[in-house]
Image 1: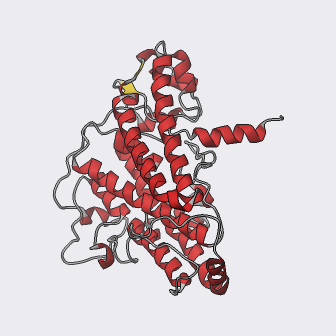
Image 2 (image 1 turned 60 degrees about the vertical axis):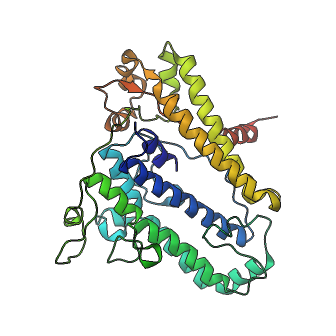
Image 3 (image 1 turned 180 degrees about the vertical axis):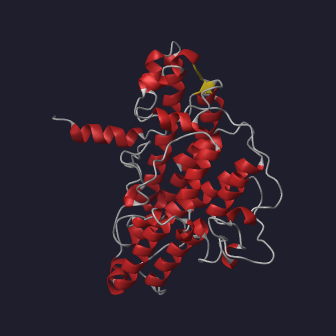
Length: 363
């Protein structure tokens, strides 16, 4: 969510195709998170959402769970370079190079395939766990994705596999011959297809006569209506210290820090509300989910109208290579350092950081 949100917020106008495309992916990613949390809760686990503390750029690279270790996620504005990372995140295996396929989990699909195999191999244990119930809530029900109840006569294994299918089909495509999500989803483009439309700046249109979609032929599948490139606010890609070194040298650093902290407080409140939806009293999951949605809107407003209106002084931009010698290339690849530069949202989860500080305290 932070990666895609940072790119979406950077768009000056928020009702054009690029914004709506990223927003549509984000909404489905939230559904995927809910499915994964329900699967964990059905097995007796408790999703620790308020404890999530992803770091950007990720130390050592990759996504959680050992997925695509060669990738280094960076919070940054929308750009062709950032879209390349989004395509790598959502890519089906057949579009990867031989080198990219070498890791245990080169794609998110591989990770979920491993979960699918584990569920199938342990089907009876899964059924027993679901029927025994767990401490966490099942959130959704009437929102169009699977929930699990101990007394539901439906086979939970089949419902587990269906939940995994939703995640992988919407992300990569229904099967290896298409990047569409399939008839169940009205043949909408997968997340990969939607980001590819933005990268190629053309709508998806399968060629006639049909041919396989490969790395070499991909451009032939995006020859539809042109998608004009949006006006993008030139935010500075977020370094690992959350701009600490930049803020220290910015004469207006206290004002910028105030706006960054306000955004982080809204992000923390959203994560806490989501955590409460699964782990709080069962009767409060719906209002907790509503509170999370309200905080998401706060984040959009605070980011677009406050944080990204705070300029990074030119003198500080000129010192970025000195301030961040190890990260400079990442920052320069995702920021146009020849234009005025602005701060971007950091997505710091204060609840997780405060908990980590308490755990490390000697008292």
